[in-house]
Amino acid sequence: MQRITITLDDDLLREVDGLGYANRSEAIRDLARAGLRQAAEARQAEGPAVGALAYVYDHHRRDLPERLTNSFHDHHALSVATLHVHLDHHACLEVAVLKGDASVVRRFADAVIAERGVQHGSLLLLSQARAAVPDVKPDQG
View 1 (tube, helix red, strand yellow):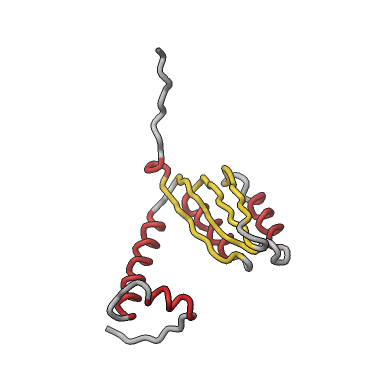
View 2: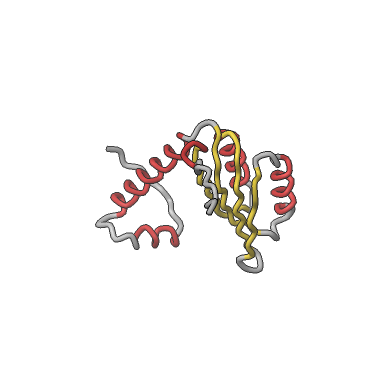
């Protein structure tokens, strides 16, 4: 086992402490394991996939809404639908449903989340085979 030093802001440290662990190291180890599992699961999707990209951004950030719009237009073949919610005077939540090759969807989502002014973001990615819903025909009666 190795000892490392990390820096956490006060709010994040309060959240870690609020988890109820006997010590902070144990909490950080469990959180790191959970994050690594989540990242591995997200990376497993290959081939055709569907995804939900959710992100919060500051719509007053210089040129950010325009950059995001241009990015989605540049990748219009991936975009199925978008939900836009005004959270407060500055923050907006968008949820974009994406469909395409898993690696392309993942790269696009990573680029959106990395935009300066995007505060939080997450991609739920499912291989299309797992996400497929069988055709259901209405009753003929």
